[in-house]
Image (cartoon, rainbow, N blue to C red):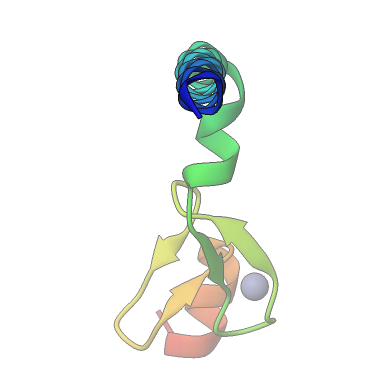
Length: 76
Ligand SMILES: [Zn+2]
């Protein structure tokens, strides 16, 4: 019984160690790969194309992929 407790403790320790290592690894990756995955994709109200949140053109009636589509939709 005592052996089982030791075994469980060791397994838990290894699991926590690997979990911590994986989390740290993800942090290291984030500056390179995190930007694309965290940016919300916004759908163009005019044509339905999905564009990254930092490239979207915001208009009065919606969000667009380009100034051209905002003009076409809102007549500006
Ligand atoms: Zn568009």
